[in-house]
Structures are given as structure tokens and as C-alpha cells.
Length: 243
Image (cartoon, rainbow, N blue to C red; front, side, top):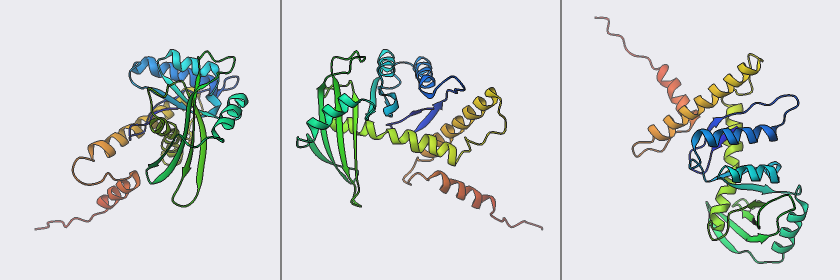
């Protein structure tokens, strides 16, 4: 599934199936290629992905489509991970910022060496350590080809965190609230049509609820609050005029 993120309005807009002999990795590259050609190269600036896609072929595909990849850096790239860890753990943070009520420490450098298969002159790595008010700490490393002159550390941090929009507001919502995993037919075309109809419904619902119904001074309602209000309005008893 591919989703618009980073705009305050998460909109899933396409899916790509895969079956035996295929893979999520290959399907994602097909999906990204189709989405960019359908919507235009200026539709998005970046593509944010998990560490599984921090591979040279996927990063090259994203760049060829005019997008800047923002990918999670994990131990599947041991040399780069070791170099970033060794450098950043001995350095003070590049900056410390208050972001959405959290204290966020940022380490940022764009002069790391690429691994042999990656055709980039250098790799930029961002490390963040997020301190939440409840005392919990979240830490992660991310890589990109964006230079520090083009995109600041805080902006790159927000791009990296938009990965959770894909997980929570696309996958989790579509499965737990919109029934994406419930398949009444198992023919491949039926499964694809069912998934496309569901994400179309999600997109229309969110555009209506968060954009059309936002007009005025009231706060936008959540999906469940709007559903409850609809149920209450349908159950309202009207007095009949029997005269």
C-alpha cells in the first residue's frame, strides 16, 4: 500500500498484490513506479520506507523517479550502521529541540561512505533520541541522499516519523476499522477490487471528515465520534403530527 504522508492528512491511494514466487519488496517497486507515473513527479518530494527497503536497487529506483528516499537504517547495513554508531555516540547532539512536547536530540551528518552497491557520492545519516513526557525514550537511525544544506535536521526528523502514518493510519486503520483483511472472495481480481474500494472509501471519508467538515471554528471529529453522532441522529424520535 502507498499512502500520502507528511501533510496532516494521511490518504492511502493504491495497492499492489503479490503471490507465490513474488515478494513484498518487488511489489513495492512496481507500486512506486506506477504511482509516480500516474500522479506526476511533482506530486511528492520524498518516499519514506522501513529498513527492509534500505537496499541499493530500491534507493536507485526512488531516485530515478525523482524522489528522495528516507529509509530506516538498521543492522542489515552493518558497515554503515557501525560507522554512524561509532561517530554519533562520541559526539554531542547537533541540536536539541522541543517537538510536539518531546525533547528530541538530533545527530546529523551527510558525509558517510556508501556501501559498494550504492551509487551515491555520500550518505546522510540522522540519529534521533526522543524523550517523551512519560520518561520513555525512542531512538532510531535513518539514511537519505538529501544534503544538510537542502533539508534541516528537524525537517528530516519529521519525514522519518511520518513512517508511522503509513503503519497506523494506513495499515492498522484499514485492517482494524475498515475490514481490509476480511475477504469474501479469494479470486485475485476480487481481492484487488476489494482492497481498492476500501482505500477509496478511506480517502473519501477522510477528505469529507477532515477537510469539508472542518469548516468553522469547531475541531474536526474523529471517525468514531462522527459514526456515533450519525447513529444517534438516526435513532432520534420525531413527534408525528396526527391532526
